[in-house]
Image 1 (cartoon, rainbow, N blue to C red):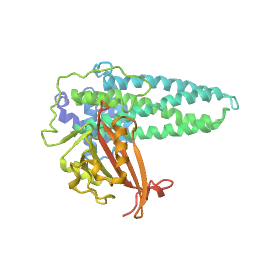
Image 2 (cartoon, rainbow, N blue to C red; image 1 turned 180 degrees about the vertical axis):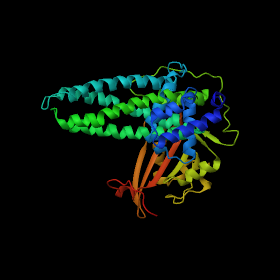
Image 3 (tube, rainbow, N blue to C red; image 1 turned 120 degrees about the vertical axis):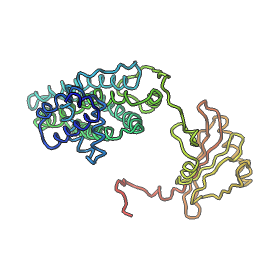
Image 4 (cartoon, helix red, strand yellow; image 1 turned 30 degrees about the vertical axis):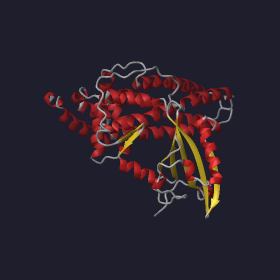
Length: 408
């Protein structure tokens, strides 16, 4: 049996069988006993690979999420003894773990407060305790930044490496926690200053389970997700994760500076394959041109020397443009009686006196909104002017909300 256990392919087959047994209703203890030898050899990456395989074979991610805690209970003994990789301060994984520590302290404070409220005599004044709870709850809500960095930075890099199933499962857990935290926010807003049975019941039935779910999520992160990420992402990918993280922010901590190990950087093949590389992605020329034509507004770009360099050729341009204007001085593209306005806008942009200029006119049944913006590089150097024109007649009629997709 041990020879088979050392075979990764066979281990994956046995893991799949084990999880299938759990989903059919067998107990955690019986499954652990049956697969005892297997569990001694299983690590975080194999657990994730098993979930990936089940999803690819048709098991819904929601079903895996439903029994996620059961999976963790089965693997807990092996996960607890797995060797944790060391990461330097400031590394994205170190930052996530530091957030977990800070948020766990907040959770411990809330647990102590709600315990005191739950044991208070009915009618007792718990206003000071409720206020403390509200303050700590606000701190706990910064968990959103922790979730957002995972969803918008970590998960995309896992997906680029072929790992799509586990992120779906964990994102679903995030959404469940979001809903529960929102309900607790409402509970705190509606609670009276006096202890009562309703509040105690809410704490028992909803608050404590939510806090436990968050703690269990931290365990899954540190023992399954993070080890898998460290095994999967290349050094240059970690550098990209680090550089993008500030845009979203952090939960309760300020991360240390960090520099990626230069070894193992993957070659940038985007340009070699004919892509136009931008700060936040890359396109083929066809994709970029088609996207610009699809925008629901017209754009025109004039460079720093006042020469027209580009206009979008959308289906419904408001003002006529032809390729003949490319290379033309912008002053010659406007009627003589409005040239002075154009010159003033451009001069203001060049001299940092204005960050936008807005106009709106009504013509031919349209309400046309025209905006001008200075285009600058990262050093603040002036590169030109962007004109954005849009018919906003329909937009001005919108009211309330629309959340349901129209039937075609």
